[in-house]
Length: 262
Image (tube, rainbow, N blue to C red; front, top):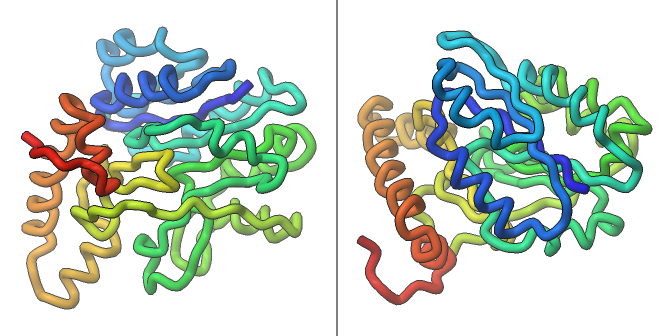
């Protein structure tokens, strides 16, 4: 059994894309847990029955992903059995190939995590990025990892998810990094593919300014607002291609598409 944790925020545009990818690329039993934060009652009612467990936030609330974890992770623990796996995935990420390419290696690698140096301050510090984790559920049953995941802890790179790095070090464990495998890069960070198995849009539910964009602003003096607008325009184009010709845009990013995208 794979227990999938995904925390949704201000938009529901990724929900069906993500859930459909699970149906296509997970061939073992799985359960999906979510929190639909900052969404109104109508959206909650539309989607809540698509999940094994779904709780709602409040419109206009200012909350953190760890607030979602505090509600969702106890439910995961209640349903965990020894030998199960837990997968954490951002709301704007989805599978593009069989998850067994990773899950079949879990005994050897123990803890898979996305690694994205482009998101770091200097591109040198590397840590397990929470946009995707795949790990043994036994860690939740036999250790205090759940408590760490529900805690904000700033790491050396200034990231809020330093708690996971701290837990790994405390237990003398290393994560197995999933690296970006794009052949075509429309942006240094966004529209990313990892190990040819996971697509992550990045900032698909918020203002599209991240560290590479701030560095561009510092280097060129370009307005952050104009950079954000440029990113949002490109993001919308890519999203529409994912929505209407997903296989083509993924093949394009992997350098395997010879046709023309609409």
